[in-house]
Length: 431
Image (tube, rainbow, N blue to C red; front, side):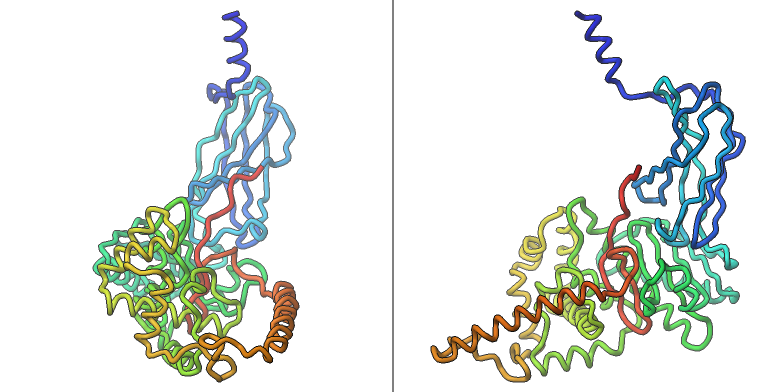
């Protein structure tokens, strides 16, 4: 009986790595950005290889992609696998760690030595500038451009550190294309044409395109200082359950960016006068697709952060960031750090702005304070039915017409404006 139990345990045990009876003559990768990466393996094994796997991941992400390329089983392996990177998009400027795994008929396996591929756009010549936790890769011929990008990024890190006592986890990589048009050529197919840059906090990466010349330093300061805040907010609030609300993430980035967006003041002021501010709770999630409403969302988010910092102090804002590390809900985080509900924050912020109240079509909506007359009830019901029907139709149309964008949730920075959404993680291991 004991022997039977031992045999059963051995049968259920997972396969183990074999002794390295494999000679790896060549393990390499070649970039054909943005279309593909060509992975090559040349090896001889002491026994027949029955299954072959390629494993790769972008550093520092813990998520590994696993693929099984076609190959001829045997002891001699000469494999070339072209990975389609238009479909499996990864941004330029990252290190990709990769290795091959050889499986044998007895259930054992051997891994090749892990290799590192610097995944840069080979269509350009890149200069590297490095200091402290920041690495800048610049495709601009003038070295002063890259030096400015490095200095701006370091200054932004220092400014946010001084405000909230947050230390950045490095290295932070910044990739600077020679122009916004060049940047568009490095994005996934059919990306929106207004994108001027994006951040991927999980990869500690910022990618932008700023042409050299008059105004270049100001644009670098505007974009990079904004994106650095995204990276640092993501690091200080990281937890396994949720991310920060959009109004907080985007509000901090726009409030602490070095060069203000001149559009925010006028857009916010007009919305206040016309009584059409978006409630704070509605800004918890992704911002509207409509450009005008999206820009108002950024302007409001900046104003909400400004209200908290100026009326309650940076200490309260720091407390709000820290509480998110515990993975609590948005409501609990605001209540614990600010001592009020999200609705109370909404009311206090609007009072600070001198907001006259919500209006409909330019007329104060009396239905908030007075019940409708009985004679008006049928008309009101008909109006609600018509409005719901319209929303259903337009919602379906909007889903069909929504423009393709970067992989879901990547923060991006429009030309001359603020960026669009919160960050999201890469997909998991795929067979």
